[in-house]
Length: 583
Image 1 (cartoon, rainbow, N blue to C red):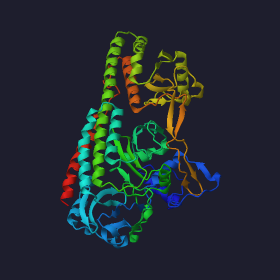
Image 2 (cartoon, one colour; image 1 turned 60 degrees about the horizontal axis):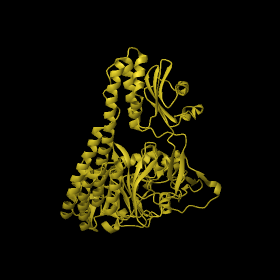
Image 3 (cartoon, rainbow, N blue to C red; image 1 turned 180 degrees about the horizontal axis):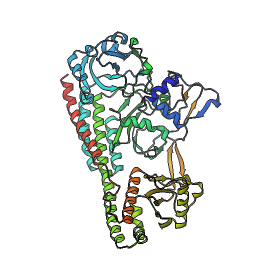
Image 4 (cartoon, rainbow, N blue to C red; image 1 turned 135 degrees about the vertical axis):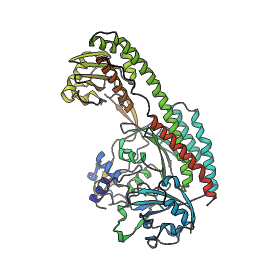
């Protein structure tokens, strides 16, 4: 596929759905060939822009894995493309099936037709029917090219039943967990018990696009555990995370090194295999660069279950195994998604409880400062009343050590940052940032605002929060003085002649990285709390009623969505065994 075609696909929403790695622009070139040694000068470092583009085009590999058969259907439910491995399940070559009605391939054609007519494919998948090769699961999804269908053998029904029973028994174990770490340890333990892969871990994503592994269980076969390590943005860029956030089902690969099978297409439609999006299909083959990378880490099988909290991708429950494995039946995978959803709901409740404590403290602070400021006559007295509660102001945004207010040309400060230094920050702020802006601006390093601010005593970073046309609230954080343990090195390289990524072999190598001159990351909840402080101070100065929102707390509707999905998964999983027996 030419690069301009790949770029066009990318612009139309193509995206990778798993941890693929970088190639330059020759996406198809060398896709199934070993990388050439090349001249050392051909090995260059990839930019994040190139990495992002790569992730956006790898959903179009024109190949699928052999654990099932892929079909693409037209609006009329006829076959317009399929994988070429149709013989085992359907007794015909793929080319012979093009143009046929999909439902005609099964003994219970009416059952398939009913499912295809459903508005919600998730509610009816899997459809369990018989093909010439035996009982199969039909998984339906809507894609940009038509209806996407994965057809897989059902597998061992007794094993499915036992796995579902184990999940039902495990769901309640999260109730005993009271902290985020306890929950992460519990989900890893439960998943490891049920699947027994070489490695199970929680891959948690930070808001600055780095990530962290808070919990992991490894077998003796694993030589590079990553528990406690941080990972770089390029290990899973934002656009790949976006697609995990919106993915319908978990991604489970049991033999990533398998060559895969080609797609057969309806030539009369002018459709090329490389133009078919396989983003949502569990059968989509990895790009060879990703296969090389997983091989460098001795990973042959890989699975990722998304954890969504507050409509944000909290992380992935990740499995890895050093050898190829049988594909777990779809019913078992769906049961594991149920367990993952139960984890997500309990996690949302634990995080909400932590935020509620901050909300209570913030509400008490607002009431106290309002009372004291009400007794003050002029604006100077009101500002003094606010800064008299500097400890509470700092506690409202975790990690803040000093607060200052720039109001009508004067600086008022409390905490570890001297008023003179706060005035320097305001001076540089006024050169580059207009206080009329309605959004707070955060800096992890004061040097980002101006190199001249580096080294100010008591502060490494700041949030500037507008109050009114001539007023700004400044919240300072000290140097975090952290040394992160990164999983390997920071760069990703590729061969510009072959268009192939150079496999990293250091992901399990602890690499200390000093975070000098940086404060801790400003999170979305920190920024919301800063805006609430600004609203409080604005009301004090204006003599208006105090705001009722503290800026902290979770979106109740979003938490309800997690609970609603959990109930649907529980109901869906409870019917799977009965549907198998009724096939």
